[in-house]
Image (cartoon, rainbow, N blue to C red; front, top):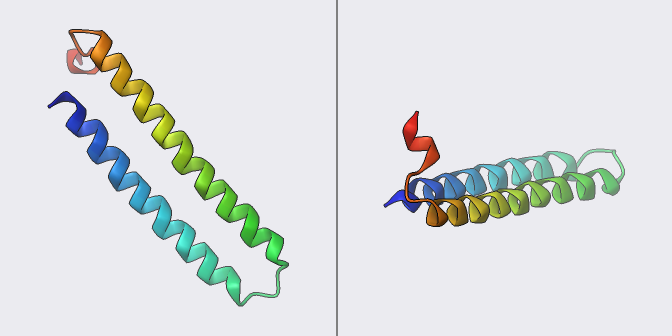
Length: 74
């Protein structure tokens, strides 16, 4: 049950980042800017998603290790 909030947060943020990435891809697809900008934006969005999953895995490991969740103290 403690992991549910972490998993839901990861799913919601992944969907949000994906929608933002798709929007930027769509917006810059017909622009006169060089395609390298689109590539940089997509790499940035993918990097955010990877970092999000890394932090979620580390948080789940931390919750498993401790009996008392430190965030539940607040």
